[in-house]
View 1: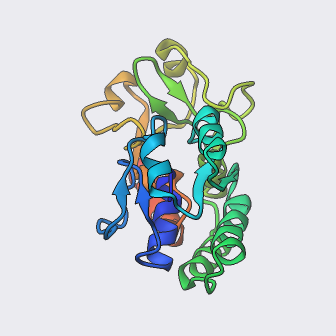
View 2 (view 1 turned 180 degrees about the vertical axis):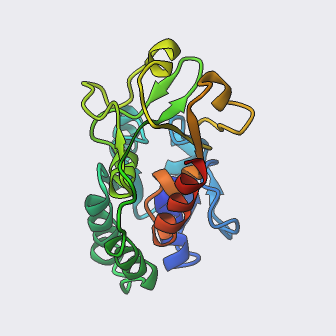
Length: 235
């Protein structure tokens, strides 16, 4: 049972048919076979999960709520909680889960991801802020996986030193931040060409794939090229 879209994809691609259930936000791969949908990452149907009696529930310390995980444990289920704050940690956690815990053969896509990121050469240094929500505006702050991914591509997060990981910043402050560009992912908030860039007139906007920016799974293998192209297009 997976409560994390990234890990759902990682398990489903590596061992099709292994998952008993997944969240409504688990959109990759499209075909999850007989996996039961059990609600959202923040509001899973705990009772339904317990009824399914999975051997293991896979969760993440950021994406899932501690009370839900505690309730699952209280019902006698084993819960594995991952922690992912940067790319190296993501690769280690994927190896721990897939090989160490599930006993799978190390998937080829994981080696491909490591190789792809090892070959990355940062482009021209740029400073950006990265909204992840609107109404209110929230941006990437300190100690985030997505922030580390961008840093490896040469993009410095203007709020990397903020005390909070996802601070709320007034749009007026963002507009006056004197950055080179704004990076707008299409999840969790779906920023588009018509919803987001207009708030920052005169500032270059990079519309990027949220899956390639924030997911840690098979998408990591193609993320460097996909994200680098989106950044180049915005310059």
